[in-house]
Amino acid sequence: MKIAVLAGGLSPEREVSLSSGTLIADALIGRGHTVALADVYIGLDGKTAPESLFGTDPIPVPKISSTEPDLEALVRSCGGRAALIGPGIIELCRAADAVFLALHGASGENGMIQASLECAGIRHFTGTGYIGALLSMDKDIAKRMMSAGGVPVPAGIRYRVGTDSPERILTEVGLPCVVKPCSCGSSVGVSRVFTEDELRAALELAAGYERYLIVEKLVTGRELTCAVLDGEALPPVEIIPKSGWYDYANKYQSGATTEICPAPLTEEQTNEIKRLALLAFESLRMEEYGRADFILSDDGRFFCLELNALPGMTPTSLLPQEAAAVGIDYASLCEKLVEMAMRK
Ligand SMILES: Nc1ncnc2c1ncn2[C@@H]1O[C@H](COP(=O)(O)OP(=O)(O)O)[C@@H](O)[C@H]1O
Ligand SMILES: [Mg+2]
Image 1 (cartoon, rainbow, N blue to C red):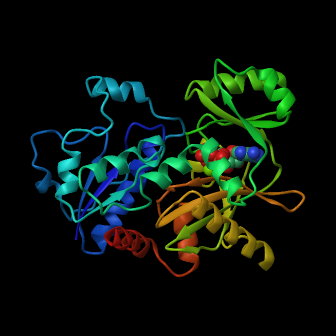
Image 2 (tube, rainbow, N blue to C red):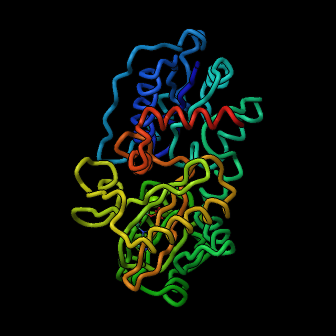
């Protein structure tokens, strides 16, 4: 098959995505597919015909740095272009049998790319449609929908930068709390807050990303994640950072966290987290695959933090580890996601 892999994008998670995208492309090439990998924001150079970009040569995998990429510099290097989809990308997707969305963060996970592809008549892209992507991307909307669907979520409020006051947080949520931009990912802009000084700094940091934030009670306990693939929940993973918490650096620097799959839970707990992952998936109208993040609190209750529409897809990422636990190797997983896309 001819597969276009879209990665990068104008997102703080673009390096993670470029790394996922390259590994996906190489895995699909290894399975005999003809693949074109493109940065959805940068686009094509305008000289090469999209058709000629499909090939079978392995692509070198880029490194992920420990700090977030400079997006303003990227925009400047593209002449200040505002369009999120670069030149030639739609044509490239049209030339493909299937489009693999190896994107992370708003650019790709919030539904805009999916909607744009659908508007252009391109239906065979991997992962959920634009509705599931939008609903799961915004943590405030997602929490309301999950809660209504019977999935327990941490108590908290939506905070509007410039309108709400930090005092509201102190009275309605209290400390310790967690401040997050509504629509980021990879722990970008997320702070754990224990003092009023930290609260000020956390609000300032998150406000640098977005005007809508969520502030919720800090739940202490074990960190777990559970993926849904083709209608079934996979074995969950327990995540144990070697130091600190599961922030951006601990997510992407190799060896920074211990990940145990299947998570050492009781059978009852495993069944419960799987049930909640499927319920969260359903509540957010997700399709094909996704990954739900949880905290199992010290008093034994699961709280769903969020659902990722396009979770990390390097071979050592969480979803591929969960798939491996049921005998689906990385290349087979990549092919399975393409097969599901073809059913659209
Ligand atoms: N309410 C909470 N209590 C404790 N830790 C939290 C809470 N919310 C988020 N965290 C921590 O922040 C990390 C990122 O939060 P999450 O909601 O999963 O957003 P994202 O992964 O999209 O950045 C989590 O993996 C967890 O370590
Ligand atoms: Mg998360």
